[in-house]
Structures are given as C-alpha cells and as structure tokens.
Image 1: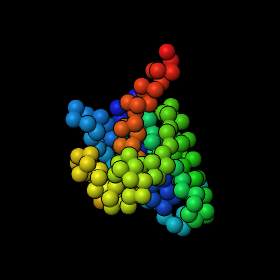
Image 2: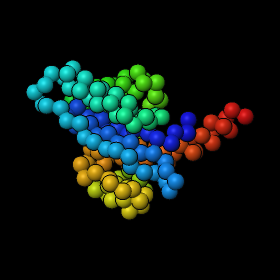
Image 3: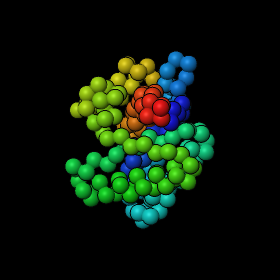
Length: 170
C-alpha cells in the first residue's frame, strides 16, 4: 500500500524506460535508471521477452515494493499504441511474477503530479524533476526520465492512497 521503493516504467517496444526511486530521509531519491532498447528487425515476441527480462532483472537487483506504469495513449497512432500495449503486458506479467502490485498512471496525470500542468512538455517534466523535486542524477535519455516521473508520481501519491485505505477500513 505505502511503498517506499518503486520501479517506474515508461513502456515501449523499441525503447523501455526504467527507473527506481526510493523515499529517503530527505524525500525521493533516484537509485537507478536505464533505457532498454530492442532491435527493429527482431521478431516482436523476442522484443517483448527482452523487455520482460529487463524488468525482472531490475526487480531482482533493486527490490521495489511496487511497479508504476504509464498508461498507453490511445488517442495517437493506434498501431504504435497496440505495440506499447503489448510491452505494457510484458511489464505487468514480470511484475505479477514477482508478486508486485502494478499501478498505472495516465500521461497527463504524471505531468500534473511532477510539473503541475497536464500539458507540460517532456523537457518541462525533466526540469521539474530536478528543480521542483530536487532529484539528482535524472537521466538525459527521455524514456528513462519519463520512468523517473512515473515512479515519482506513485511515491508522491502513496501517502494519500494509504490514508484513504485506512479510512475505508474503519
């Protein structure tokens, strides 16, 4: 419910952004980030296996308590959205295999939580991670930076979700 370490994921078949954030003494801290790339000519099933394996390794190495995943934006190119949906499924299966809960966040929800505006650009979100939230080591790679933003969205909302769950249990 109230995780102190989360794996953030920006899904994609060609590039998958991953980031591990943990709550430290002075707020969220970036522990690790990476962008996993797959070759365009590789069969889709093999590309998905590469992605799932990378998620499994990240979970095993960093021990997050949850996985935060950006939702597919269906309002754009439907063909690429379907591929991203498949990548999302591979990530979710790897998380479930590890017994981790998965929570999804829409792109505008992430932008709002990190930059204060649902229509923020990728560069604005990346700057807010550093300037507003004080994160060090935010990657320049856009997919990994997006994964940091997704993980931060999860960590920032965790106390509220915990309070709502406790109130509902009463």
